[in-house]
Image (tube, rainbow, N blue to C red; front, side, top):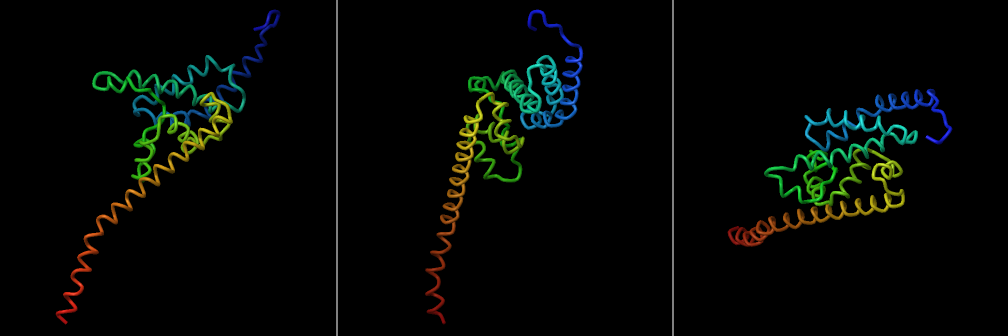
Length: 201
């Protein structure tokens, strides 16, 4: 607060009202974001933590940017949660960078090729694609969530989409090659047996 400035209680009430509206409007989206990234039993507690942090920092968010801002808070909580979960048998996993992107199992259930390609992406590629394609955020909102510039967001999103397409094409080419390989012997048998039938007729 600036020296000599008196806090207007109307400002506080307005901020609180805006936060309550944001909570009501975005709780479902934040819960869905968390559901795709952590076990179901942790979703409710983490969602409560997201909004507890958001409440303390509510004066720092611009109007209209609440959801991507909440996603940014949620991403930090997911990363911290995964670090805490990486104990015991998962100790080695803790040595790898922890990300907040959803796994293939969390978002892809019907397309095996897409799931395999998704696993081949780097964590930050998965995260930006998830924000764009799963959370359905526009580029400016993704920029807010990731705390990077709009231009950097556009470039990273383009590269991530390109990488996903490359992985999908590589998988499709591999499947096609496998089909040709498996079909080869059958074709050779047909070629060999055809003259036999002609000789017997």
